[in-house]
Length: 289
Image (cartoon, rainbow, N blue to C red; front, top):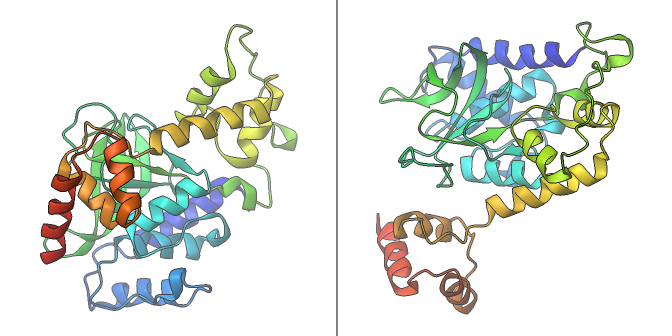
């Protein structure tokens, strides 16, 4: 099965649940797909009353047979963290995903610059064309149904993208590529640094997983050097120390475990330029809700 076929299987699974609402047969199927896979993330089986957007995406990946290459979770923040750890997270609002990838949203995005807020919601990319991304999402809107959303590339509320390594699980080369699965060799720009190529990787120009390695090597780049530069850029972007964030946003990061506990939390927040007392007060308010 080709990478494209695997991606299409994930999309078809999600399409089959369109219109489902909590308590429906489609909703039950999503929960069954997620709960039937082992191992369960954190040993937690999703329940009928839980928010299920991340479970919908996870279930689509499970049905596509790519669970080994995807961050299965029922929690959007934890799914995002798993993707970051696996280096399949793209921290670039302007990235153009492929069908079968996932879009993560932050509803407090003000639309300025690259969003670095709290991951609130996730959906599976169904199609991309004409600068528009079509996404299938579970737990959507007041009716908590499975439905579609259309947004522009680099649109507001995009937090980032999860791009599972479909290519690593493909059993056949894509027939649209030349024999051996290799793309036509791009010619390296001698003046282009590993950092510059790494930024192109994060923008989606070089694909993912085995495909990325093939293309970079065929173009004459040092794959290890470029990947090391990619890892550095991802680490820099995922560093939570950004005084431009609101106190409420940092408080949510505290509750998500990003800043540690006790004296460590106070030290890290202060070193990052935040008002520890203000952040802690916001944390206390959130815990009372």
